Image (cartoon, rainbow, N blue to C red; front, side, top):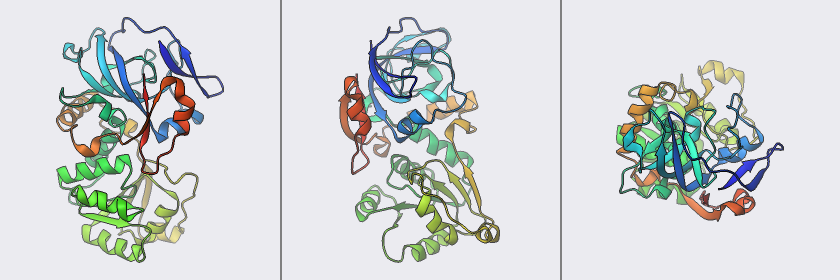
Length: 329
């Protein structure tokens, strides 16, 4: 089969590899429909995650995708056979798991969320990691009755957050960079959206943060934006950093601010969350999420589609509206 593999120099190459035929216990074979290229895919290509299991024969790349289950191993629920699934490969570490940028993937079944039949799987080929990240964050990192600040308001994860806070009734404000992004969120029913490039942003931010009692920051940007809002956060605010859209830009804050307002800065990764590390809780979360995956804001924002042999062009693709490159086997 055709696949995209990682070389010893951490570059990508289009190649032919044997297709998996009989999945081992706990695993499924998935005929891939589409895979999304995410910011994380590009970042971790040159900065591989520590503790990753060894590859099973081929270093096939890619962690996010969607497809149809065509074979199941022992111990896999029989109901999964023939079903559409959204996949986040990193949810389950296994020496038998292969990457998703290929025609037929082999993954542990616990990394697959079964999609309702009426959903178009391609529309969620890059969504599961975002959806589960926000779901886990809201469950374990936002105190009851308190508000939330989402810095990357118009990102894929930010849009998921807009949908989930509306469903669970968490008061939240979303930060975006343009009036167009603000208007888009408002049209989807988001109540509080601030444009960080407008005059008076810091004053509006400070006022709204107090009104919402927003003592948790869900930060996917870092850099200059986080530096700007830190002095205006309420007392005892916890900043949880899950992403790095701000690139290498440093965070700047005086230690007197950290001490005076009792701020806390920590990372958040869904792979270390209480939900993902507990198989029972993860299964329960998947059952709940399966019922709402037709939420429009969960859909993967598509920029352009590429064949597997167009991987070089796909990796350099950039969209002005945040649309992702999709790999179509």
